[in-house]
Every structure is written in C-alpha cells, then in structure tokens.
Picture 1 (cartoon, one colour):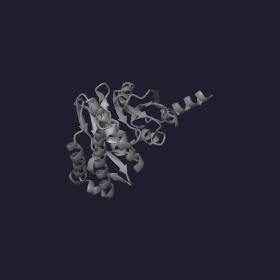
Picture 2 (cartoon, helix red, strand yellow; picture 1 turned 135 degrees about the horizontal axis):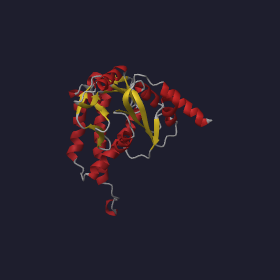
Picture 3 (tube, rainbow, N blue to C red; picture 1 turned 90 degrees about the horizontal axis):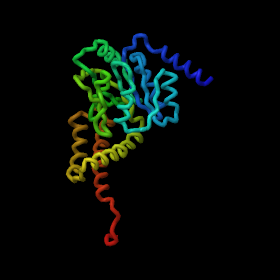
Picture 4 (cartoon, rainbow, N blue to C red; picture 1 turned 90 degrees about the vertical axis):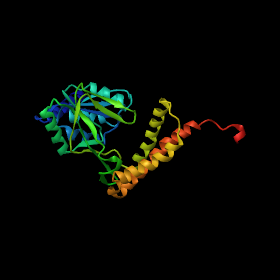
Amino acid sequence: MLAIGRANKKENALNSMSANALPISLVVLAHNEASNIRRCLESARSLVTEIVVVVNDCTDGTDNIARDEFGATVYEESWHGHRDQKNIALQKSTQPWVLCLDCDEELTPELRDEIHRFVTEDDPAHNGASFPRRNWFLGRWIKHGDWYPDRNTRVARRGNAIWKGSREHDVLIVDGKVKRLRCDLLHYSHPTMNRQIEKINYFADIFLQRKLDAGAKFRLSQALVRPIWRFFRAYILRGGFLDGYPGYYIALTNAFSALVRHTRMYEHAKSSEPSSSSR
C-alpha cells in the first residue's frame, strides 16, 4: 500500500507540471535539505520537463519530498565532493537543456521568464546562459561587495557542459558562447551567522589541502597582504559600504577568512611536536 501511495503522489506531482514546460532537466544535489528543497523545486517546476535530484545519506525526508511532491527522479550516490557529484548528476539528465541549481537557491519569476525566452529562442550561437546571484544575509539582500553580482553559469545544452574548478569553487564550463542574462538568482546560503562562520573553517580546510597538493608553502607576505586587500576590495572598490552594516561585516569576515586560510598553512608547517629543549 505504501508503494501504491507513493506512486500516486508522484503521478500527481508529474501531472502538476506546466503544460508549457520546456525540454529542460532541472538538476539538483541534496543532503538533508528538507528546509530548502521545496522552495528551490517550486521555483522551477513550471519551467522544466524533468527534475533530477541526486541525494547522499538523507535522513530528513529530502528524497521523499522531491519524489512525492515534485515528481523528481531521485538517485542515491555516495559523496564524491561537490564538483564530481555535480558531474554525476549532470550525466543523469535526459533533456536537451539542463538547469543546475543548489537547494538553497530560488528562481525569481523574472529570471524564470528570462530563461524561458532564452531556451525558446534556441539561438545556436549560445550553448549556455549565466545570471547574477543575490544573497540574503542579516535581514537584507546584499547587492554590492564580494557577494554581488556573483555571476554563475547554470543553464547549458546537455552534452556541452562540465563542472570544473577547485574543490571549494566549482564552475560550470560550457563548450561555446554563454549568454549573460540580467535577472537575479536568489541565494539563501547563510540563514544564520553561525552557518556563515562554520563555512570559514570548512573552506579553510579545503584551501589547505589544495595548496598542499600543489606543493605551495606558507608565505608571510600573503598572510599579511591578502586580508587587507580583501577588505579594501569588498568594502571600498566594490561598494560594500552601500549595504550598510551587513556590508561592513561581510567585508571584515572575508578578510578574516583569508587570514584563517593562510594561517592554516602556517599551522601545518609548524605542526610538529615541540622538542624537549624548547620546553
């Protein structure tokens, strides 16, 4: 009976997709994203023909929400890192176009319409589309500094794109020209300060491993200059001051994040146990 109930829910979800949907596969990764995934999938449901969700170790029902409420095809995969996991998900799409979103992202109606026009026109001169991403933080939309416009390529012809880049900054690379759309993708990456601060250590660890893999060494000049430059660039050159106090906080924590990353390299270089003579 449970299987029949789920099948009926999925059929209803599939039937609720718009008759005007385009030949687009929405591709999403998810791990315990029950609090976010409805907003993400709902924002794109009327635009796409297929929803592909690749999950890993979900314990909060994320997979059931995607499957039963949105008619998604859900795949369970062990975790291979952001970049490789996104490529695995990309390969599971079946439609001529793919739209890649994160669970904490949402299409605005304006961006949805713009993507609709782009795919409908099917201009052979363009194999992909990019758009700016706007972050919600400390009770306001951030529109300046290092966090905006944060342009991302997320639409591509299937078979003409692959995720590349470093482990902490994956990028969708399109074989061919990418059209620059104007409307914003909404991003809810930092619901609280605690989540934002947690990510400093997470990305510092990835930064350290990447530098070690490349044979890089700690450089005092980088540890001294990079934090100052990051603050000046974000707050002054990129207008972070126009976002009020949140803009100041973001510029300062970006500077601190740079300091933490380079100090992690210093810590690694000095991580040997003290000798008896130094005690």
